[in-house]
Length: 457
Image (cartoon, rainbow, N blue to C red; front, top):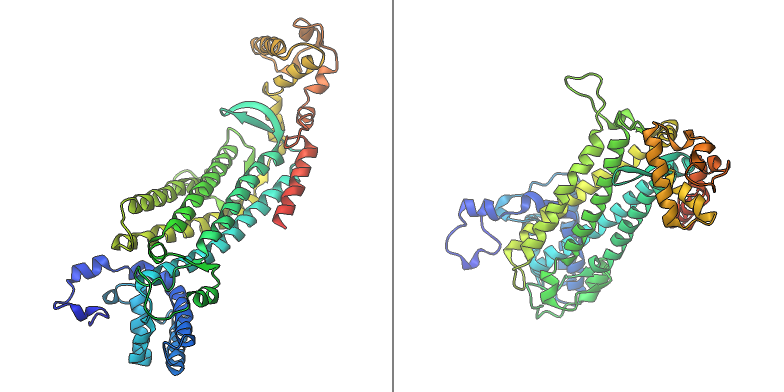
């Protein structure tokens, strides 16, 4: 088949080369963006008197016709036409005749593909922001229900201090809030228009780049044509943000897996988000959070792949840059799937508050409060720390927990102990006492949830 660029060549493209260099198998995802950019471009060509208005209307009608066929999945794309841009142009020429060949006046595939990816990533980023907010809403709803549910807090995966379960969930809310803010901020870089930069140097036609930029909803055209066609920073930034976000998703998934195990029994995931074993009928496997955790390496890989791809490229466009799309597409789809599953999984999660509270009663996570108790009574904290260490060691040797000791046993270690120590060591009191700003005290968690709601609204 005749190539649209074939005038300079004396031989047809080797079939293996054709298949190896073709990107249509994946860049057809950009079909609607490509048509949108082409419509803005041809309208500008008309308004600048570069094309006759009857040519503009004919081309625009042809593009709209192809757009409808693409939406109805009535279009077959061809490897022979290499990429989405050449496929659309070929379809246009078949639809309206040779005048379709005038569409490419004043532009190149180089600025065209960059424009398509800016349009695609802008749309997908807006959608991801909404999905992140759905996850945040699920976290807030669960946190509000469980402000006064007591959970063992951990450091080093060892029992540390009891916390509000709502407080623990809200830690993830703020992680996702930062992810959302990063996505929102990245729109400043995504929303630049490369269209009209042509191959690398601009064009001799009297085009109006601001007109196409405005028509496509961009904030501004790239100021430099070389940068416009070679910049992939906006994709790198997206992959970087995605890598941070999937890290947060993975950390939360890990906790859901641990909490749902027989050893913890703190939560139970809804059956709709779990699967069974082919051989062990008793099993309920947390496959969704396990896969969310597993997808992390996939997104990291796409980031490292694009960084490696770009590190040695001279300006401007190079064929290597064809490899910039599949990782972006896959990252978008991976995150869309992950966030779409995470929100309802969190919302439907059963929290076993009694089990959590019983766990807190069977550890030494209230030890710090004894040190604080002695410090308030005048003992230097470092000295109090040593006293409590000895009390914990004694308790372990006696196979008791701190609330099991008698007042007489406490007074063996310090005469500052009085009967009010037992109230101070109750899990609810331990949590409520941490009322510093941002702490796990119930009033602080309530304030935090209210602040979160303001962010969501």
